[in-house]
Image 1: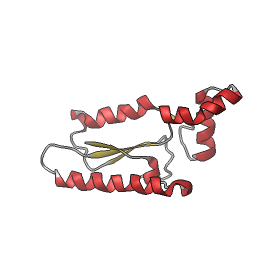
Image 2: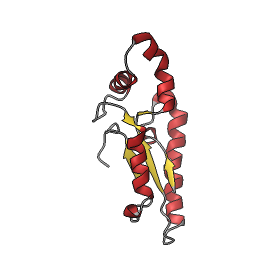
Image 3: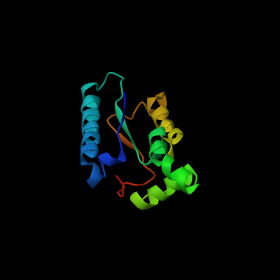
Image 4: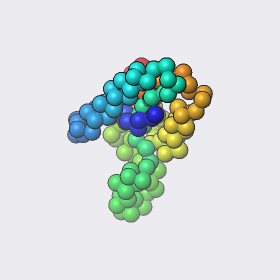
Length: 129
């Protein structure tokens, strides 16, 4: 089982407290479920994407793309540098990069990973644990 949470679960945005709280709740639920199914062979984990160039992100920036003539990728990078300056990769992730983590955590290679919060946040959350 995989919950798609968010880096906002760890780094709650002041202007989106409601969103951060629900994503933090997902982490607790996933951890509790992992304990509940312990020993069954079922794993439960959370994936925490950071800024990602998803359809929703593209929709949010579509007017700016039209007005400025800049590419979606350029505007996404500017968004990250303005709103998530702690990003180590200094860009938004692709949906494929997030999906790669989900594929891994659903695979037999991740059979010893359960109850984890796995970050695909580009280093936005500024801690090492």
